[in-house]
Length: 463
Ligand SMILES: *Cc1c(COP(=O)(O)O)cnc(C)c1O
Image 1 (cartoon, protein in one colour):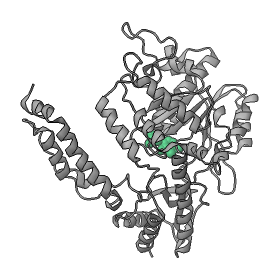
Image 2: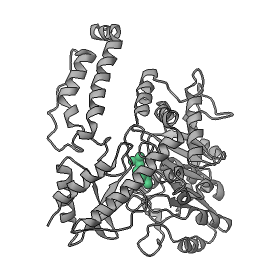
Image 3: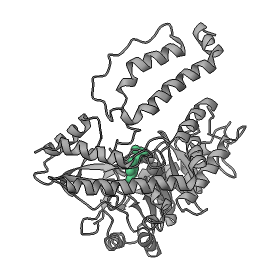
């Protein structure tokens, strides 16, 4: 064994203690760390010839790179939809690396059963029935891709084609209908060979809504003349957190042949609160469901879950049969369900957080985040020169300049807020108007943080 490696092996507990000390320092200071870092990155070092040992690597990381990492896991990073990492989930994440399990198959370790337990808990948390099975993937983009891959296989079954054998081309043009899908849906359609242009935008409801007009969807399905299609319903849009009427969409299945995929990346968490659970009524009727976990569950990157009622079709797409792996029988191993073969035990951080805080703890995060979004919305309206572009529906505030909200002026505002180090908001365009979004999904965010965000926006205002 190389000398530094042997050295590290003999001092493993001390090395982990040093890493723990740095981590403790970082999480303690997280709320005060600048939310984003714009300074120049350091010059690239040459590949080390002789290693410095783990202690040396830690010191070099702390000196060269750590100062430039963003406070995106902290309470006032409101860009995109960004969760943090609960204390228990961080512990679970460390142990994931410590045990370094390969959750491709069930043989020889209980890790697969732990992932199955976690998936079953999440299914219950989001109000899905036992007909749904699930698997961990890296994020909502992959979850959407897997869901739509199963949809593609289903289309083949309807049209008498085996897509997994013959390829997507054998299907001919595929019809994908959706009102306000996330950009990852288009990416998934590209990856799957269906094509980004096959998405047909269905009219959304009037009066500043992003939810699909179910009557328009009905008409669009009817125009297909019986040809099976894919409907992507959106439960929680990123700009205004609008929800398609899932129950009404599912009811259309009585008259039309379509696969219902629901992108509930963060919207699924509405199910945790009795006040908002109605927003995801009907989620269980979906054929496939996407939920992100590194957003509102507040587990570290990268984690999401993919649910489906059609595991048989999922195995057709994703099975990995080889002389030494064999064909899946009984309950299929995870390597037959998702794009990965070897897989990290992504479920462990989620398992830790669910055990540590339970349904009640995670419900409190959701409800507090929603209350804080409303508070920010009211505060912004109280500032001169700003207006909301939509009512605060759940955990996102979408607002812009009252006067001349040009892209340039809105970007200037976003940059000035970010430069303060106090808060981070991301620009968007909503209804053709350049705007900013503040998305609440971090477990640490408090009322005091909202006041600081308001102060940062107030002093960054472009006049
Ligand atoms: C964030 C998000 C995605 C993509 O999620 P990743 O985890 O970044 O891949 C997809 N859909 C919706 C609605 C989202 O909010």
